[in-house]
Length: 197
Image (cartoon, rainbow, N blue to C red; front, side, top):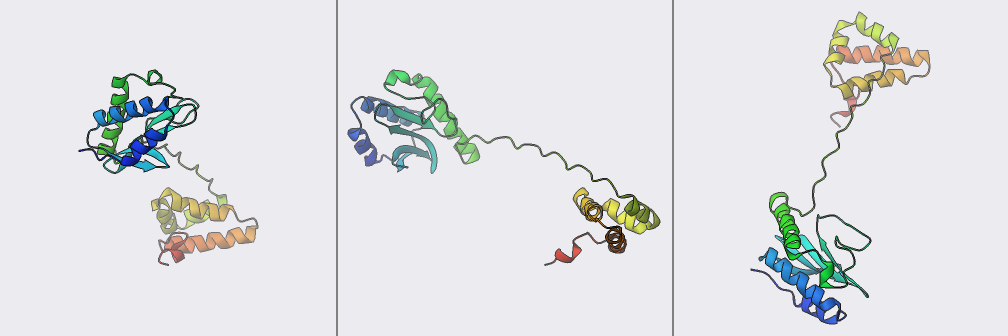
């Protein structure tokens, strides 16, 4: 059973005469589409909630009204999907509106929100860093270290290769290669010291 909010009646009563029939019509349609919703005021505007989640809302301005169905996207230059509403005729047909409201309620039922979920963008794998020649030669001379590095996840391999490739001085690079061979021979990841902190 719907929970009516007396603030809706006050909001509509204070609206300009042109807006009152629009707001009454929207309210009636939303209740017909989803009978067990709750009315509440959000952002100083009447909103309809289903299972505690925003489903739809309406607002009045000086010269127009607006209606929004959560998750249905924004269109035009006005708040809501249906532009600046100056009369009931500016709204889409009742069946189309009810269909959109029901679809938002179904999203709440199935996904916990009326918002449409955007597909997650696939992340491109990071490019491999070229193996420094000196490090490659050291790995060939130490099969246990090479096997450990090959067994690591790409991100852990990249940490070693990048650490060595970033060395500017040859002496620094040689020290890092020696340290890497020692740690890899023991099966340690590049940042093994910090793993248990």
